[in-house]
Image 1 (cartoon, helix red, strand yellow):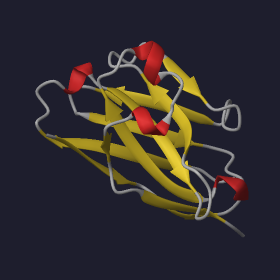
Image 2 (cartoon, helix red, strand yellow):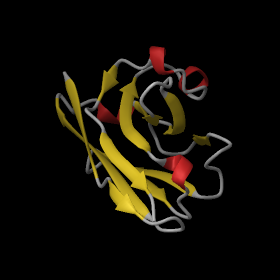
Image 3 (cartoon, one colour):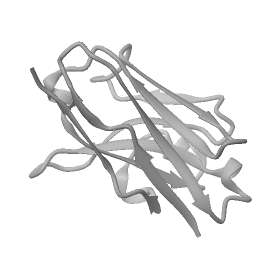
Length: 129
């Protein structure tokens, strides 16, 4: 079973940057076949897709709200995906989760949370002055 652990969250001022990491452990021999996504959730609201990256790293997708500010990347040799978040806004405040799934890219691309099978525990991001 693949396991995911997020890190890198914290408190940052508006306009600041954070880099989140999602490290995989456990049964990682087929990690290179997993699409990886970042999602976020604010209490009382539904979980939403932020960004995702294809198994090879060759394709990415971003929510409109983060385009131009966030960058997703991965290193399959390190079993890790990163989310670089720049120009952070108070509305980016949420718990951020990474998720993995072996579905086809044209399915994962849409970042529907219910279709992702492996989830991390989350890391909290607070953007506040």
